[in-house]
Amino acid sequence: MSYQTADREIAAGVAQLLDTLGVQSFMAHEHIEVSVEWRDEILRQLGLADLFVPILSQRYYASIWCKQESGIAAFRRMTLIPLSLDSSIPQGFISHVQSSLLQGGQATYHQLMRGVASRDIRFAIDAGIRLVADARSFRQAEYHFEAVRPYLHGASDQQVTHLLTVSAQNGQVCHASLCARDYLPPLMQSHGHLLPLDVREGLSQVLAQYAPPPPTVR
Image 1 (cartoon, helix red, strand yellow):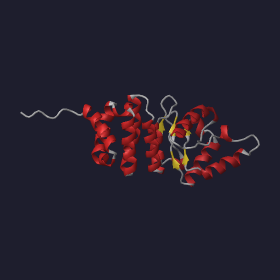
Image 2 (cartoon, rainbow, N blue to C red; image 1 turned 135 degrees about the horizontal axis):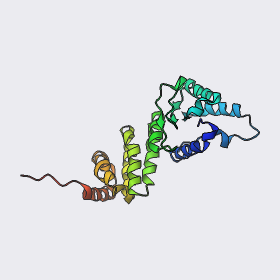
Image 3 (cartoon, one colour; image 1 turned 90 degrees about the vertical axis):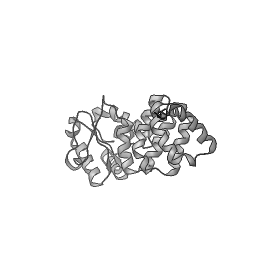
Image 4 (cartoon, rainbow, N blue to C red; image 1 turned 60 degrees about the horizontal axis):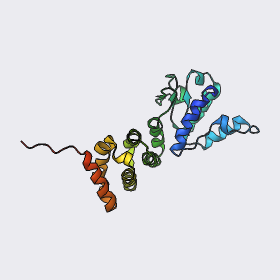
């Protein structure tokens, strides 16, 4: 995480979402001990990290330290996930990457998944499946499914069958309208035969409740 001190609460919210996806974040104001030379520790962490998530703003670009961090990240060819607080765009060595606007200072899984998937698509898919499995409402199920859907082209057969299984086990997922009508049927068609018989039959029965009626023959 790269951010101005004034934006550390916003950065902490982003870090919390990343943690849910299984990505451990480094935040200087939380993780650097008093006795440690902070510049050396930031450089060390930049050398270890795979992702670089700057919280862009006018304040960010007014800081020479923040600009140096983004330059180092670009030099190391780290995967960049620029998030903007005030429509500030990436500058300098990271100007080739498009930023995503934080609505109300809050990030979304959709914004973060894009960057995580560009680094490791299988890791991102596993993270998305966990989100779907933990959905606690129909809307949340649809929201999490929407976050992982764009990357399922890179999923293994095992990952798709796992997604179908957790969907069958969570009524908030398999009974969510968009999931039942649009998201799950194509996956059942391509991978349903890989499911255990009881899971396949149970999920098929649920999805049949939401299937559109056959066309009327005139």
